[in-house]
Image (tube, rainbow, N blue to C red; front, side):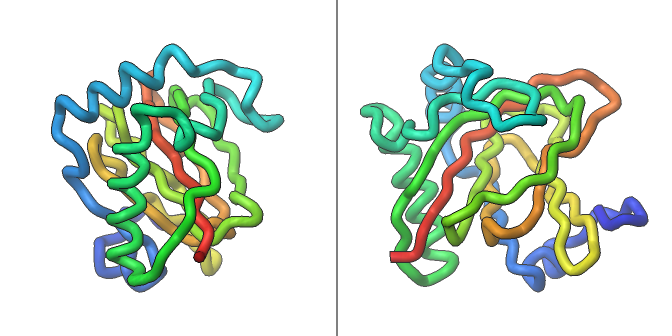
Length: 171
């Protein structure tokens, strides 16, 4: 969505270097990832100003999560036609009740996999003096330059949004 409230189309998203893909995992695999992640969510991994819960950012090192991380990494590598290393991977729980624009330092790309997102509340990004709302269908992935300011958009309804985030560095 631009500052005027317009949701941009996929062609415009491609032009500003956002990668989006839907139907990443089967429903069984998506629910399995959610079940594995929920017990690991706590509030002490959050940066200041962030609400919600986060897991430790080393999920990519934990057995069971490797299937998900490898699949996301492969999709991103195929799209960008280059190799990446995973630097961090974690799960976030938010309710759409705050804006906290931030960047991911010291990495090239960041991605959000919308694990549970019934309201399709995606990611809000600021680039080229525009606010871009990247819709977030459940079981979809978005990846973009980690230096772009982004946030969870706010919602008028309280909801439960779970995302699986990876930070990647060029090899």
